[in-house]
Length: 385
Image (cartoon, rainbow, N blue to C red):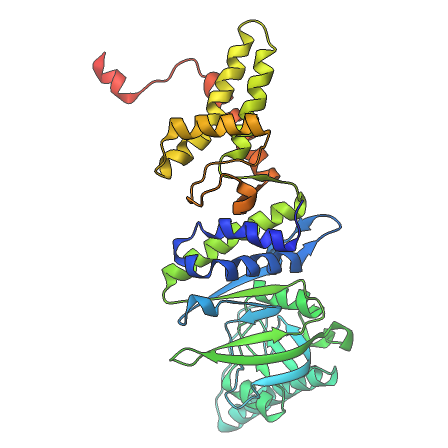
């Protein structure tokens, strides 16, 4: 079992999968650990990845990637003159549009005179003002709307000092509701003070040479919803960073579920091979050869690792096996990084016990499935006969 610092050291190995994130591995490891521990339920040992939102924006450096204890949405205030920063915000989360009600059936409206048009305009204005009044009367200081609204509604919102954000996506609405402890309101008539969410700070951030803007909702009462804001020079780099971060988060999730670890570098496989070989020596008859075949399969992992690292595979595995038996040390593995030591604990190369068990179990199941097949037909065989 390892602590939070040890987890970060171990996750560094997982982040190395992504070539493009090599120069800021430690930063990404810390982001992965902090984000997972922020949303983890340590009582049930469960992690809900839906509470971790990854938002990528082209521009800037990979080192500008940061973890926000809140929500980032790729939106701005609906009116350019609305305030860019709000404190102690009460948020109304709406899934109803700022527009006059429409009949459910097909309809047609004939405007035949100037008076009719003025009446229609007055009706729309009164409807908008009624909606805005309902939002303000319940105590809301910010309206987040899933749908859009036209320029007149936008002007009236600004006129009545009610900042608003439009076209907020469905998944983002749900995350904001979770983070702010608010309720999603489908109708203006159902708005009450109890259904409002709260946030300590809502601000627009500007970045890049093109002054791109995004909205950040921070200091939320429920810190279990977080956002990883990834920056990169192009889309491919951002996608690679997202993939590497997701891999690292999966490692941390496995440690939350079961904090037991094994050492990498082929150390775990070699230790298993030594124990299985000991068990094979105790078996009489042909059954022992199945055990010895399993030993050969386990030893193929450190052998492949040694070969990929430019080391002589047979000599390396033989020496490693002899060292493990002589020292009774299951931490000894292949020195793939050429650091001068075979102790994987010193090199901080670890794997989760959960993932290692799954790997060996799945490989064994695949072999059993193949052994059940009587014959394999290859397309080339048909042409030869």
